[in-house]
Image 1 (cartoon, helix red, strand yellow):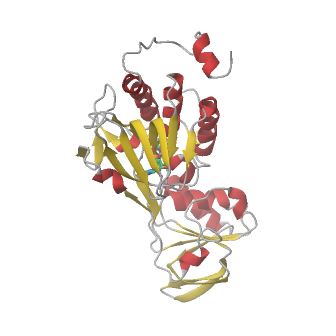
Image 2 (cartoon, protein in one colour; image 1 turned 180 degrees about the vertical axis):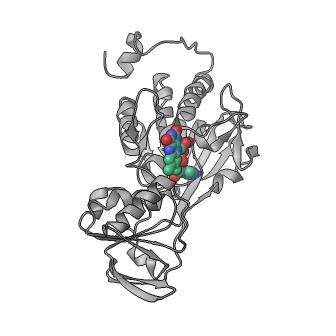
Image 3 (cartoon, rainbow, N blue to C red; image 1 turned 90 degrees about the horizontal axis):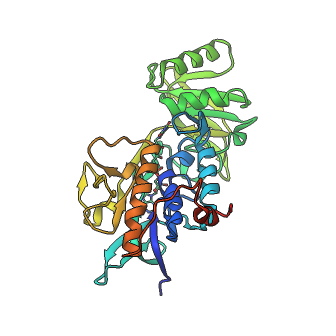
Length: 341
Ligand code: FAD
C-alpha cells in the first residue's frame, strides 16, 4: 500500500529556485511539499559549490552557496514546508478531476492541484573514475565534492583533474591539508589561468606535489584509503592518500521529467514568460529546467520566475479568490504570515 499525501502544491527540486518558490507560494497561503533526490536542500549550490562565493545575488555583495541555502531555509521556515529528501519523482499523471498524481521511487503518492518543476539540470551525478573497487571508499575517504573543508584538515589529499573544481580545491585545501598531490593526465588545464599560475607557484615553493599521470589502483581498509598508485610515463608511483577528490565532471540527466509528455526544447521544459507554465496547464517549470527566449540560467532568474508562477498557481488552487497585491514592508497580513507582526 502506498502513502497518499494530499496538498496544494508539490515542488520537484529543492534547489534555490524550489526553496524560494515555497516563500512566494506561502505568502499566498499555499502549502507545499518539496521533493529532492539529494539528501538535503540547496541543489547545485549545496552539492557543487557550498563554499564558493556567489557575487550576483541582489542585496548580497558576496554569499557562499551554502550560506544562500541556509538563508533561504530561514526565510521559508514560517511557511512550514514539508521536505522529502532522497526521493526522486518518477511519475506524473493528470487525473480526470484535474488533480495531479505524482509518484516517487520510494512509492509515495502525492495528490496535488499544482506541480512546480524546479528540477534544475535534472538529476546530476559525478562521473566515477575507472578504478576498481572505488565504490567501497565513496562517502568515507573518496568524495566528489567538498561539503566541509574541515574533513580535509591534516589529511593526505589527492585531487585528480584539470578543471576549475580540481584547481580551486587544490588552492583552497592546500593550507589545511597535511599533504596535497594534484594529479592530471596532461600538462594543460581547463581551469582559469590565474588558478593554474597559483598552483604552479605552490609546486615551485614545495607546498604541493603535481604528478602528470592517471590514478590506478587504490589501497586501504574498510573504506579508508591509505595509498593511491599513480600511473605515469616514468612508471608507477605510490602516494600516501587519506582523502581522494576525483573531479572527472558531472553527468546531468533530465531523468523522468522527460517522460511526462511536456513540450521540451533542447531537453528543457518550454514555458511562457507570464506564468512559467508548461504545455500542461497546472504544471509550472521554473529555474534552470525551463526554456524561453532570452533565458539566463541564473539564480535570480529562478527567483523572479517563482514570484510570477505563484500568482498563477494561486488562481488554480483558489479559483475566483481576488489576490490583492501587497508589499511585505507594509502589509500587516503578510507580516503575520511571516510571524513578524
Ligand atoms: P538546481 O540547483 O539544479 O536544483 C534542482 C534540484 O532538483 C536538484 O537538487 C535535483 O536533485 C532535484 N531534482 C531533479 N530532478 C528531480 C526529480 N525527478 N525528483 C526529485 N528531485 C529532482 N548562478 C548564479 O546566479 N550565480 C553564480 O555565481 C553561479 N555560480 C555557479 C557556480 C557553479 C560551479 C555552478 C555549477 C553553477 C553556478 N550557478 C550560478 C548556477 C546556479 O547554481 C543555478 O542556476 C541554480 O542552482 C539553479 O537552481 P535550480 O533550483 O533551478 O536548480
